[in-house]
Amino acid sequence: MAGQKPTLTLLKTQYTLSYGMRLDRGTASEFAHPHVAVPLPDGTEGGMALHVINGTPEEIKARLLESVDAFFELHADA
Image (cartoon, rainbow, N blue to C red; front, side, top):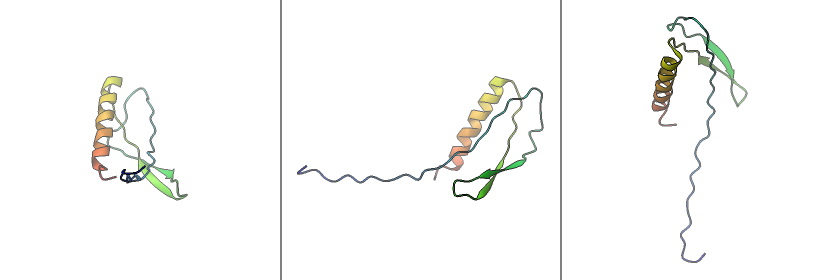
């Protein structure tokens, strides 16, 4: 259309978030962070730390949401 400036579209980098959750009765050490192998989209293998949160379901949810927020604050430049 005449008189319209072309728009510039910036492509954002795409990412994959890998996660898993499991809710078990009882408590486990929150200080141990075992690592598991994770197959990456490019065919290589990466590592991921498993984190443990103890508490009632409501406490666990609150701490998990805080952890997710902190994770994305650390990776704000992504």
